[in-house]
Amino acid sequence: MTHSNLNLESRCIHGGQHPEPTTGAVMPPIFTSSTFVQESPGVHKGFEYSRSHNATRFAFERCVANLESSGLSEADDRTCGGFAFASGLAAIGTALELLDHGAPLVCMDDVYGGTFRLLTRVRVRSAGLHPTYLDLTDPSRLEAHLAKHKAGMVWVETPTNPTLKVVDLAAIAAICKRHGAISVCDNTFATPMLQRPLEMGFDMVMHSATKYLGGHSDVVGGALVTNRTDLAEKLRFLQNAIGSVMGPFDAYLALRGAKTLAVRMRRHCDSGMQIAQWLATHPKVEKVIYPGLPSHPQHAIAAKQMQLDGKPAFGGMITILLKGGLAESRRFLENVHLFALAESLGGVESLIEHPAIMTHASVPAESRQQLGILDNLVRLSVGIEHPDDLIRDLAHGLSKA
Image (tube, rainbow, N blue to C red; front, side):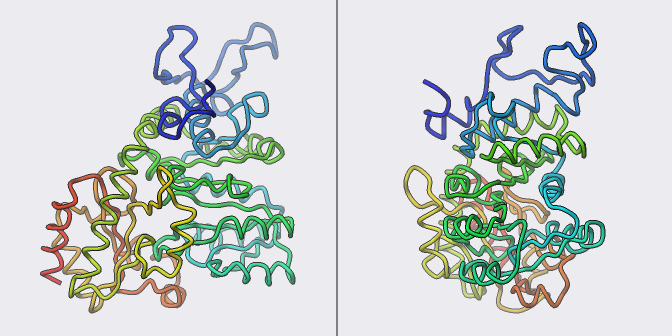
């Protein structure tokens, strides 16, 4: 049986992996050597310099490529279309290098604050990129825009960060193909356990491996996966030329984390749904945004494209709007304890944060207002603790709000 024929749960553990040839080690060793001996100039064992070639990083890259169903073999590309970077932003930055100077692109209007910052405050200046921000929950907006304006790339998040909008991936991918734009999906929130954009027609997937893939808040990393050999060839050149690669220790930790992704995501999804339903009934909560609730405007699309074991599953990210404003938000956030007040998400422990002040502070206030990132908006990353304990913690915090 080939790894591609395994169920996702098994692919988390075995996908793209081989026993270490020298010792037969089950887990790939951490290869720290920066350089490798050559028998004669240009004659070597496939490894020259660790920025270009590292066996530990290769193992993680093949794993994430397998989970995202790249469909590429090692004969097509050495790591099956998977590429690992020092951070999620390093992955995004490398993906943007596929565009020529001055290229136009379309970006989802609600994205991670670091993505917005990189595009608007760095690449507009340094690369002359021309980003257009659109609400892509209605695919017709993209169709109408591309009918009038060219775009080299379309960048999508779904669910988005932090308002959890959901985008119809198959519809967006089809539009991008008709207009010759590279389609990229940030799949960090859903993970390949819940949705695999390449299977829906996308050209590339991005992950902040810091989040669910690593899963333990102890590693920073990013990943890109493509199912196109032409893009894989370009990304391999760019990864080496730019050099913002994932180090071997981080690759080892990310790979270890990925092996438990399936079991963790089940708990994240189950607890996320239970907590979202409880929050929806709380008198101090004005609104709960969670794709699993029928009240979510894209609930039907989410149920169709986010699935686990063939059934709808909606992840562990919840966004709420409290009754009140910044003062109430502060009191709430200062009085939860099991939920750690911290940036990031996707770890085994539950985290909570205030996007307007923390993760999305780089987004201009006017843009935050338009997107609904208000002073009473709070984002929760539900961990794998017992949901009853998490609910008690939230109840205590809300009692002080």
